[in-house]
Image (cartoon, rainbow, N blue to C red):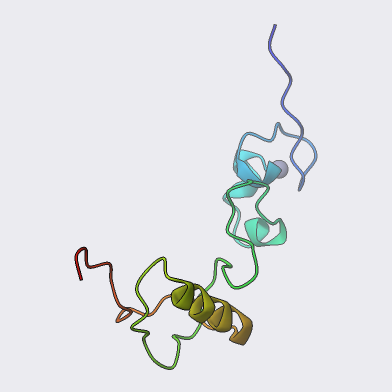
Length: 96
Ligand SMILES: [Zn+2]
């Protein structure tokens, strides 16, 4: 016995076989996907970590990854609406 998939959230006619509760046809229609947020628990939707391009932070940080200082920097970046990561942030250096 197989479960019947839910119907598409957009057209309501075809089985929702794609993510976001959409059918294959609607999923690949331009613009339709944007109308329905991801239903995945792994979707990156939390504050300051959304799936969009955000401006880079004004400056990189020398705080080492995992440090409380780095966490504070990340919180401040999230609060100001910029990207959490700067390409020139300090990286983990074992033994330093
Ligand atoms: Zn559909």
